[in-house]
Image (cartoon, rainbow, N blue to C red; front, side, top):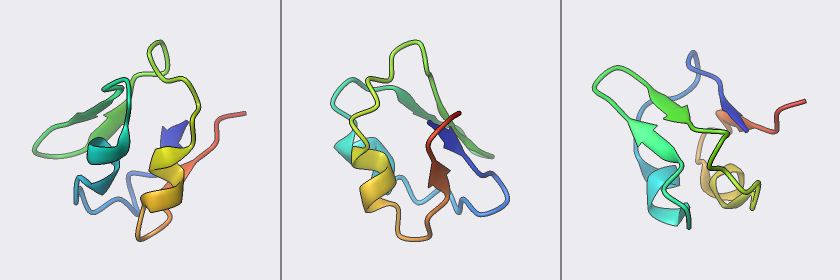
Length: 56
């Protein structure tokens, strides 16, 4: 999973639905730790501005 930083408004909605705490929020950006991410797609489904995409 990856976050489009140009679209992301750092709302934190994705953090609340990640079952493995793979999403890190800082003051300036949100990042997904793909080493931990299980690709459950919860974050992708809840992002209100569609800033999260599946990695290739």
